[in-house]
Length: 190
Image (cartoon, rainbow, N blue to C red):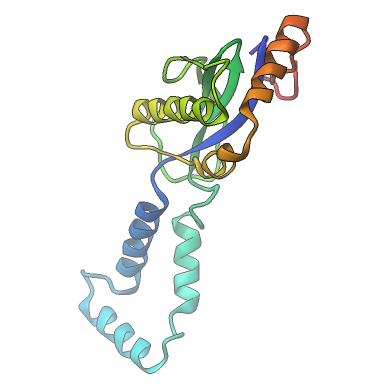
């Protein structure tokens, strides 16, 4: 967005990591020990009792069949956080499918220019106060994306150590000079 200063992207996942692995485990268990075929299930259980690694190939195949690892493969969108003047805002880029399912083929499209409604940043606030507003903004975004998981690990880890005052001053100085770098919808900077 012209006139804005890029902060970071936050990945939006179809579901949380714990829920994904719980569902994947159930998927694998059903393939290994099918409820509708008790003979096959019992045979495989006996084989597993004798050799714990007997089903390693099948488990690996089922894990890949289900969709692989949660990290990156279950991303359905991104929140592009940026500072616009004295506000924190987030553009939401979402996978273009109408129905979100497990998939490895994704094309992300701009869903909205402002997710969660912008919030004013305290220009004379402490670093902790500025970070608290940014974190509250992200919480609002999470509320709008019901049933989805926003990955805030990087923000939560690095946010307390960022000199937010300097970042905001630089944003204001560059914005006033008219040369503020921003990311464009086509990639790169505008």
